[in-house]
Image 1: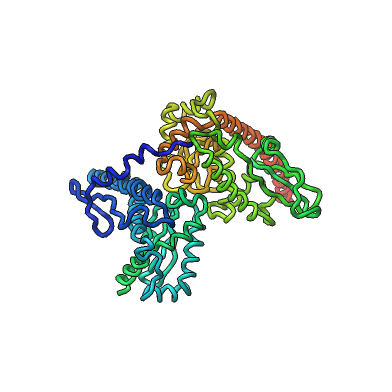
Image 2 (image 1 turned 90 degrees about the vertical axis):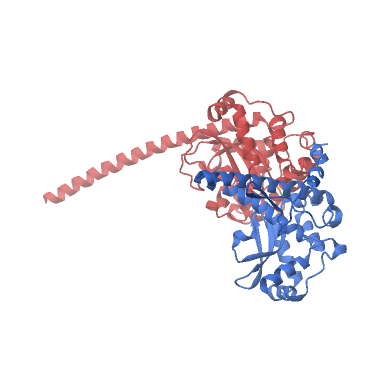
Length: 238
Length: 309
């Protein structure tokens, strides 16, 4: 038996439940000493609700540990940035950029990801109709082709990152994009709006799917919340 | 680092003949000078068409022997799946290409292609990286280095503890998937293949380096001495999100300082080989210079002659 993070696990839940946050626009934030910092947003379903596509263990670690760590480090970086800006320390400001991009991106991406998922019993996996369904057919030929494309690009992504269904607001087209590490979609251009983001970091699937990332990608479509994608799409194109 | 198999396509497309044991290959490569610094002559079968591919080398210890610090399950999956898949993809990619006959390190450098990586780069580099990673550990590892290695660590980092701190911080702060290395930077700042990440650092010193995804310090012309894999698959089954814990245990209980010392000796040997080559090429240059100076004098005298005519 290898060492497992059992000690850390015992504390799971405790400190999550004692914290209070305001969920504003999906990215829970709070004010402290005039500086806006962020808190872990609640999941709109139970950790086990996405089984068998994604195990409860993965969901809990992913939410309470990984997402929380991005938030903690983002808040820390924001405080350091605030201090550096106030002191006029330009090099320090520049130095903080990669940390802010990584951890802020991690927070942005995961906040979207949780909303992209839905238990099957609540409509997860139900294919999109309406305007988004038409747009998918128009841009990719069919939903199946889009899924195939996202699975292929997600599986081929080197290392850690995300595969996105994006709305290109300028071209008024849907596109499949990938970003490395925790780069949010906006790093590809401000014209891109994320409709759907799939996390292909190993921590998103390894405990369950091990090295077989394609199986994770195949199964995640059973719990995709197309309603959320439809809402975002309709708001943007309205 | 590799076991090469040469098979004559004339005899059979799938036949394997003359498998060369890894140790034999290493010795051979060492004697001839490794990588791009010299071009090791390859053994060839008599036939024109030579098929060459790599074989999966097991870690130099039983797969369960790193327990409890790295589980058998992790090693089996990491070596038996991740490493194997890179190796298989490498073989598929190089089949029939000009990379087919190169040693692994040369494939890494050639396919890095000045940062515009060819598709084969990922698999070649990851095959090399994993071979290196397995050797970077041993059952009953950890502790402190000794001898010249320790002296250099103390010279270049201030103390062993300061080195540990720098190495652990680098491993913890590698954003996303990748590797962290202790390397010997012996190049002469004119790295042909890539941007030198530490251009202002002195040559001939130890440097800690982070690399994303598949990249390794060979592309900067550095000599890797030690590698820790910080892809999540390297530790997730055992440590979940606790990368810091994995890194600490790796340094305290798993690292093979013997291996690091042996790589340092190889780096020195490479330097000496280079110095010898530099010396002999500058001698050749002198000869060429002397020769051209003589010719110049001759031409001058010709010119003189012509002027006098």
